[in-house]
Image (cartoon, rainbow, N blue to C red; front, side, top):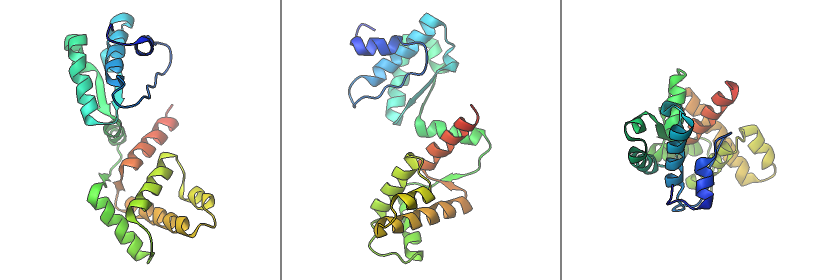
Length: 192
């Protein structure tokens, strides 16, 4: 803990309630989380298997795992460390959900076909995907999206794509990465 600054130490030693660490890259989040996990296990006797550490990247999760070994020794392997998307995937699968992931070029092709089927002109696939992603990450439904952009022809075209995109994914049992987050959020909210 001696390598942590004052704010990082406070975060690492925080016990009651939920602790969310939001900071810029390179600010010591991974080191702080690692020390926090060690502190929870050693000082408060929290069973390592009851700890969930979530990161945005696989690299950060792996770095945390490596840094935990000298802190917790053999107990480190019992801590649940994962990316947020991997955790959501596991959570949904564990609930019996059947789906495949739609991402990368397959997602681009999928959206391109929808735009072509709807005969929409002047829409960038990248812009459409960004707007849909932003809406989903803010839990904005298609109907809310349409109401939000009432009168904006371009964004109403995006809303049409959003609606078809979700409908077609549902038919094919597909989820994109934003769906993983949204469905896991809803599942956790319903099962408090």
